[in-house]
Image (cartoon, rainbow, N blue to C red; front, side, top):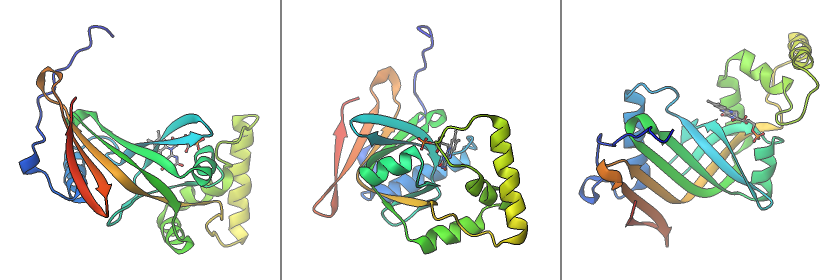
Length: 208
Ligand SMILES: Cc1cc2nc3c(=O)[nH]c(=O)nc-3n(C[C@H](O)[C@H](O)[C@H](O)COP(=O)(O)O)c2cc1C
């Protein structure tokens, strides 16, 4: 590991070239990530707080609204419970192949059931059934038990309509800070931080 060393040379982040709206800037970088054909450009590491303890895991960005980042999950999962108790969270986009990361800090709220419904219906049937078959984050005795839960759910939906489980849906994260990080040579990276102040975005540069 000590010998793994990479110089970052792919780009720069200069105040003159960035948008004054961090969502516009995010969309530009997201488009770059899409075009670069990296695996799962919408991967983001969601960190939430369990009492005093931090907790992290990957989720997928599924919608970018005017001023919110949306992902879907099980509301009864660890993250679901943590966000309900404490909405403060961060989202980190690790676009390492582009020598970039974006960190979003904000508060998560549950989106409307209508919006969750619409997205649920757009998922493949197998994923819809999967949402019923798994009590996410709960222990289970064996893989066999999980496979049996899936079979039971499949059986059930042969005779019943496949609706969204009430415990499954979206969270929208409204940021108060968004940081854009671009790797530069000699570890002198560019870090541009947007902070929401009186409903407008203040821009500052951080030392690497
Ligand atoms: C590439 C990738 C994408 C994932 N996307 C999601 C997602 O969109 N929603 C989700 O609930 N879990 C997703 N997961 C699984 C989570 O990382 C996690 O294992 C699960 O949500 C349970 O987390 P929790 O116990 O902390 O609540 C994904 C995992 C990976 C590796």
